[in-house]
Image (cartoon, rainbow, N blue to C red; front, top):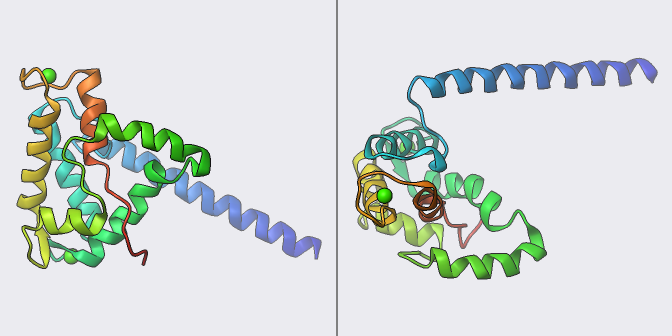
Length: 168
Ligand SMILES: [Ca+2]
Ligand SMILES: [Ca+2]
């Protein structure tokens, strides 16, 4: 009994060790031009890099297209952190946030998919890049081609995937 507990504990330690190594790898890749956090986007080039990183993450079967299923899966992973994580207490905050984020907000991941894919069955990398570039322009309130701290927050809010209507 004790022995199996020990084995479990060391397995868990191994697993978390492997995970830590993976995230270090991811972090060093980030230096080599991968932007996975919308708040890191300050220029058009960075908005493009961010869109490409999102696309790579979302295109699970790596066929160069993001299907609706893949998009919903991606939104499910990304959205809860922002839309649901704070639980019931967060609901009030979310309602207050709505005013600031109201610009071009679509209601659900399904609607967002239809919009970005231009109504067909998949999102291409170009379509996602185009969408994020448009959001960059929109967030760049003073049109100086760069996002300051306030504009970055706006960009991050605009680009956060919406929670799906139908969970997987
Ligand atoms: Ca795909
Ligand atoms: Ca600006």
